[in-house]
Image 1 (cartoon, rainbow, N blue to C red):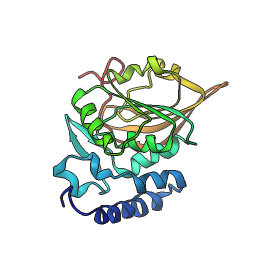
Image 2: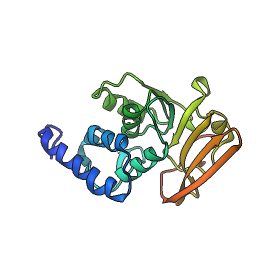
Image 3: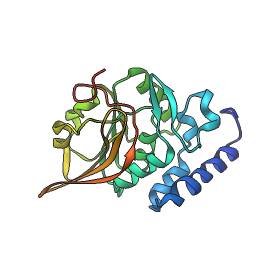
Image 4: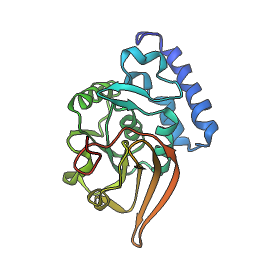
Length: 220
């Protein structure tokens, strides 16, 4: 399978991904499903892995990083509870696939990546889709993005030992934050719901993510 392969084949693979991996596992939000049917995931994986772009597992994207399993991307997106009017902070741009999904579903996306080469890769991938509401940044994602805060939603796509207070402060009230939190090799996907009364934390399921790097992340 090559990138020049006809789009009908990619479309069929994408529809099958949504039907068998996402919808059948309990994600029924129509807007989320539409985004996953529309966004061409094969644009966001390295050429050597394009035949696996719609498979039910994560894939390497270089620099020791991965693009997450489609179901996990959809699950985290669904728990953000997006209505289309939010300003979102994504910590961990990676190849830009989650960024594209967020751009499709929200008003404005700021995405920060600590590895410049990956941010460049994501930028090239996102240019194919011509989104006008995405702003990519290179820097320490464990510090959030104070220059553009506050955010209605925050998603962290790398494993955090805990959620830094600085990032919680950048979340609007009401607002939601979704992140994998826990040990270096195993975490729990958590949803933090912030309102005037404080923070409510919902634990979703065990996950394994690459580590969050930076001042408040995992130290090498």
